[in-house]
Length: 294
Image (cartoon, rainbow, N blue to C red; front, side, top):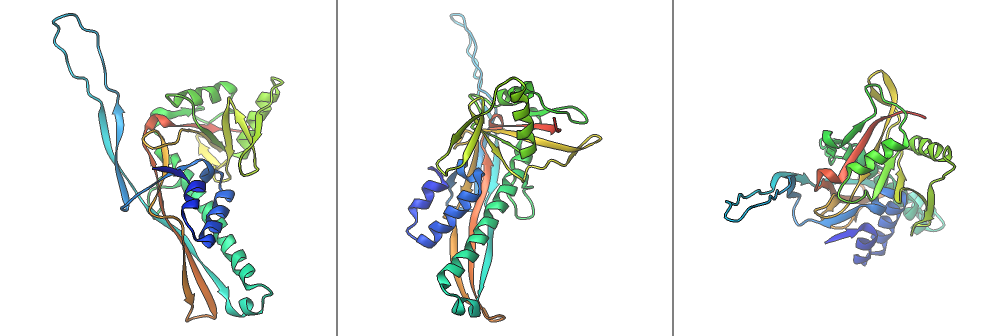
């Protein structure tokens, strides 16, 4: 079953964990859109469609030939994301409200986990205990290059990127703040601004061609393409089980009370999440590379 974290969060009765998950979701627009599926083991073996099944026109008494779909078997493994929160016992005892002190410390760690997941979602290498991010999941055939040294994207480039995702439209466009400024500049030049709306988290979201624009600081504006060192990327993404990009997890985000430490006068709480990322279809993900300032 596919669930957004906002829905999965309701399945736990632990209010402390619910608060951690809520902080992580609020701090990560990626996690507001990314659906997750629950795994029983530590990895997912799946078949990714390689070529479509064909069909043909036949005359009476013709010999029929099977044209089967071909698939490539792939594996997506879970990784461990988390961190320890140490609250000094002296501060905890002398603080006006110890619960507030602990909540503040855990809240900061939850934000750090959200930022780490965002970074891995885009840039994860698949090694160094990271999942493989969409930067490395996108295929060459689903990449729109803006030239040997990059270039400022046009509206035609954005439309072509959207058209690379099929069937249907992308469910999100991910880009840097600089690229979004360039897109808004292009639209203003036509006396046309980006559509806006408020999402369920009270955040103002902009749209291009009806597709939400999600900006993230983990999308670099300093990539090197040819002789240019000021390039960025734009990603067009579809989500869903068997359809596109999806998160993986074994269990909800957990908060373990490790207890009082031996080496220092502090109480430790460990926050951990067994999670990963999978792309079920190559055509669900496309990237524009070499995007320079307008």
